[in-house]
Image (cartoon, rainbow, N blue to C red; front, side):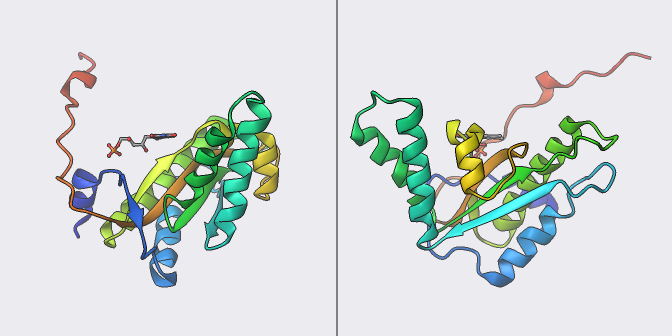
Length: 186
Ligand SMILES: Cc1cc2nc3c(=O)[nH]c(=O)nc-3n(C[C@H](O)[C@H](O)[C@H](O)COP(=O)(O)O)c2cc1C
C-alpha cells in the first residue's frame, strides 16, 4: 500500500480479532514508531506489549482502577472494564517518558509519543491489520502506570488495540478539513 493511501484511508477498527501482527509485523510497527519526529533525539517513547494471558493482568488493572475511583459502582461495570483488555489480541501501551531536565519542552516529548502512536496505527493498517487508539481514566492512573512498569512521570498517550478487523466495513468517509484551514494574509 502506498503511504498516501494509508494516510487517506486509515480508519479505526471497531472489532479486532486474531491474527494479531506477528513478530515480523511488530518489528515494522515499532520501526515506524521510532521514525516519529523527535526534537532533541530524546527517543521519549515507551511501549508495553500486552498479549495472551497478560491481558488478564491488564483487565484486572482496569477493573481495579474503576473500583478504586468509583467505589459505589456495581460489579457488572467493573467486569465490563475488565473485558476491555480482551477487545483485541494485542494491546500496546504507548507512553511518553518526558525528560524534565532536557531543553525540549515536555509537551514536545509527549507529542512525539503521539506521533509514534499514529505511525504505529498507519503501519499496522498498511500491513493489513488494523487498530483502535483508546485512553480512558486508566491511562491517567498512577497505580496502573506503575503496574505496567512505567515511571510516575510517564504519560500514557494511548492503549493501541491491534489485530485484524473482523467483518467488512465501508471505507471511512472523507473528513472535511477546509473549514479548519486559513492562510495568513501577506
Ligand atoms: C489520544 C486519543 C485518545 C482516544 N481515546 C479514545 C477512547 O478512550 N475511546 C474511544 O472510543 N475513542 C478514543 N479515541 C478516538 C478513536 O481512537 C478514533 O480516532 C475515533 O473513534 C475516530 O475514528 P477514526 O480513527 O476511524 O476516524 C482517542 C483518540 C485519541 C487521539
